[in-house]
Length: 323
Image (tube, rainbow, N blue to C red; front, side, top):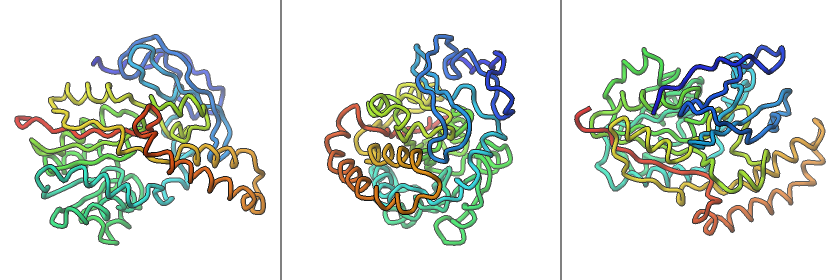
């Protein structure tokens, strides 16, 4: 894959100062054949501004365009990074079980670990593995204090001080719903491979941009998550990138990682958008409808996970033994 070209087009976002210049080419393959996939506002927080998700007609990579600057990202992430992770413990346990067919790792790094919910769940299956975590928020210190991880690193895995310190230290590196938040997913993958030992495994789960709910629900599809999701990467693109980095793809799976939340998430966003700020009584009135949506999500999940309505995919890749 070619290196991502730099954006050179003029800024088209007015005077907010929180967006980079709009780019006219795909950040993944460099193609200039783009189409607008989505225009939306911040539905979760009802913040100002309009956000655009473009899609490459050649490689199908979807990305926020124009992208928020670091200052814009900080503005829209304020208060959110400290919120509890919404993934249920059983989903963490299922992800951990995906690694049971492989030799038990001595050391495991969870990237974007938050308060260490995944390492806490994974210890049930890997009691002799040393789990560490890296995260950009202070939640990673809470994870260490609670005993969920042994070593805590605050910052980005791509920070040179962190990646150099952790070079070739881990048998497994996991990234759960992390890459879509990063400015450069390729750089994140390279950093993950640097901290893996030769023959180690990389475990990734990300939203699937080919999920049919994305078309059916439009801007209400919860995995668009604008403006916090910067990239939505097709499975084929990540597989090709990892293979170009001398990895062997061991597992690709769209079924088991599916998260039954599409209808519930869409309704929650619609309710948040429609109701006034002071809405306690109104929220109580719609609670039964949210319960129905949740029941539908879970009831339909066994069927949907076998179709194009599956919303998440998993990759397990092995780093080359000679790297």
